[in-house]
Length: 380
Image (tube, rainbow, N blue to C red; front, side):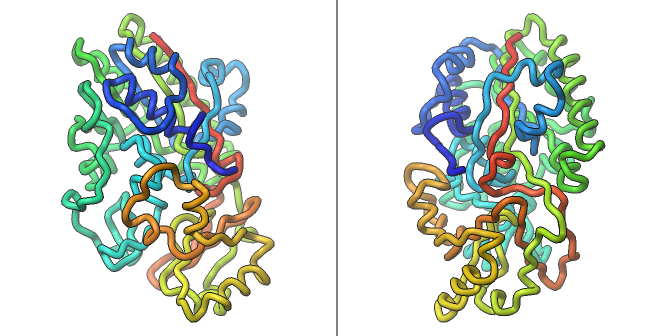
């Protein structure tokens, strides 16, 4: 499923939000009716529930509060992962422009493979702030004409990443699901001024990675969100609030048998000049020029059952990462080749300092499970 950035994508939702709050976007709006509702609302809340694909939402049943208020499906971006999608929510830009292309990126400016959201390298070394980076994208909180708030877990919301892309928004932390809803309610009612509130909940995604999205624990957690959401919404009567609920991506369920472990393929590993980057479902490969033929031959002959081989530059040209002018470091960050995994397969490599562990749930690829997410709209 190739992302369509011209309609029904999270980038189009962000375009409507930007237009509705006094800014603009080069991307088409999701629809003009939604933009009009955003313009009329005193409080606009964008709630992102990490990892909830449309297929997971459906399992709540037709009587679910969230299901009853769902207005349509959206597409995620590519790669369908938190690092890239949340940066799209923060900036209103697709990965092609904001330059965050996965959980792990080979960043030449640090001379290392970096987890940008945690500001550490894969060898667990801390990196310095990037607030002086000339290519740092501008956050939507800097563009819109209303007071902005970011609500998220205390454990991550004061990280350098969140501070840099949220310096013109008030950061508000919480410690529990009840705290999540209470903080949103308090922020809405904190003043009579117009507000934009971005609120993020991570735990469904975490449970799905650990136990699988179809586990009892993950299903029970989503049911708890659904029940608390209905109670929360009742408290918003008379506040002129528009609540938009969506996700950054969905997930697939995999197993150890479905995983390609690059360390077990020495003829593949010797072709690579850097560790695998990106995601286990969409891995960026940096290949020594002298090993290109060996790399291509090995993937086509030994791994074609598990993945598709693409030149990363071809994916950029085909619009997988977005539209418009590319980030100056985009090609550096997507490698020479991209392995897009088929069905429920993943690919992983492990550095000497990393524990061997395969997640049951994963994402980043282009399956419907990963790419199709719900949009729920509630007006109070």
